[in-house]
Image (cartoon, rainbow, N blue to C red; front, top):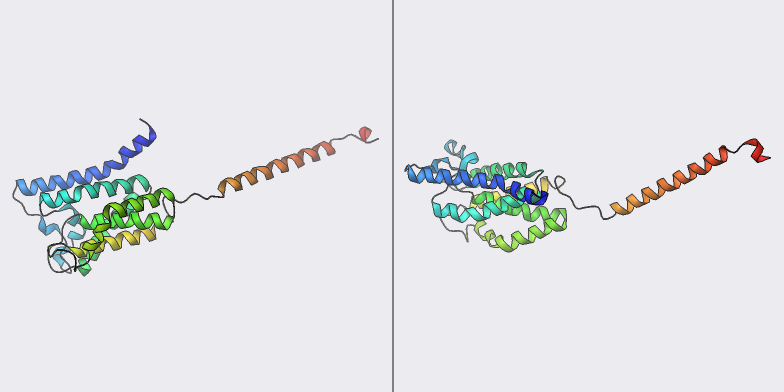
Length: 228
């Protein structure tokens, strides 16, 4: 398998595993007639603290989960493909950051679903590409804007449905933006456009130094008889 192809498949491993867990939990919830809603975030209440860690795993229905499946997979894959060195840290930070912000600013009630994580990934990919000014990453920023630019309206209560956790969306967006700034110096960077020129100058200087050294050695090795 070619390295590029292998990298594409490896970047999909963690997103697919997470989706497997999400669907497994939803099948258990429906099949066993269980209710996992209490694993969500309940803002500013002790019973909602665990939800900071568990809320992206729980969904209200298969319809809710299906709506999140494609964007969650695609954005996670982009993260693990283009930012593979720092992707686990970014993913974890957005996951927890979204939960913490929702816990602080959310309205009373159970907040569940991976929507906040999706918003966090989208905002990270957008702002990270812009801040790094690296062409491939900027292209991803533009693609995310084209595909998911309309998500921004569901971050505000004036446009979101009453049953939608706009606080979770906003929390994810804030967490993703903060990660883009905090990790700006880590991971893929824009190549230095003058790096090749500097290398060539260094090579030329080394060649000149070697030439001068050879001239000095030839002069010093001349015998007294040759000088006469």
